[in-house]
Length: 125
Ligand code: HEC
Image 1 (tube, rainbow, N blue to C red):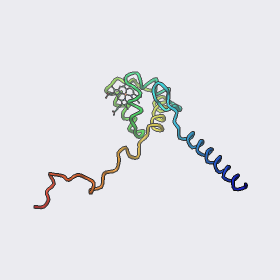
Image 2: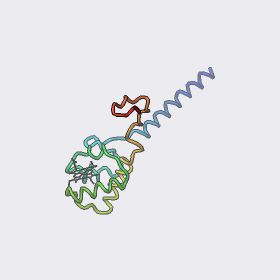
Image 3: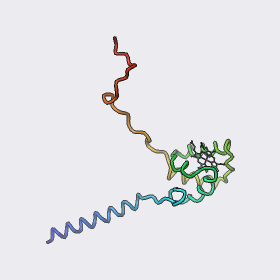
Image 4: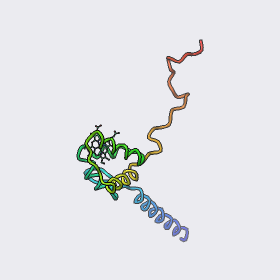
């Protein structure tokens, strides 16, 4: 009986741990734009979706410097209006945190022995 109780509490514990875990990692997305719902999303929606879809933002990633350079490029060449320093900081904080630099967006290379034969490679003859 006691062993059964232990299993019961272990089971309940796992369920609670799982529930907490999924709550921590589930990112809630805004219904229309698909932006991560977190501080700053309204600033991005208000200033960054008049010319193109938010998808252009959500499918991109990069460090703060990369996001800043994209903003400068749009200001210099695409007619993006000046942003006040506070507004720009809010937008960059948001983008850096939720669409930051990825460790790697590419899969690892295949090992040599799995590659097809290269017909152009000299075989030493
Ligand atoms: C005045 C119009 C305008 C506004 C406002 C605007 N953009 Fe853009 N943005 C563009 C244009 C034009 C492109 C190029 C689209 C294309 O290549 O099809 C672009 C491209 C992009 C790209 C893709 C860049 C790349 O390297 O492919 C990202 C990311 C982006 N914008 C983010 C933003 C963010 C963040 C904001 C708000 C701070 C913003 N945009 C506001 C006009 C704008």
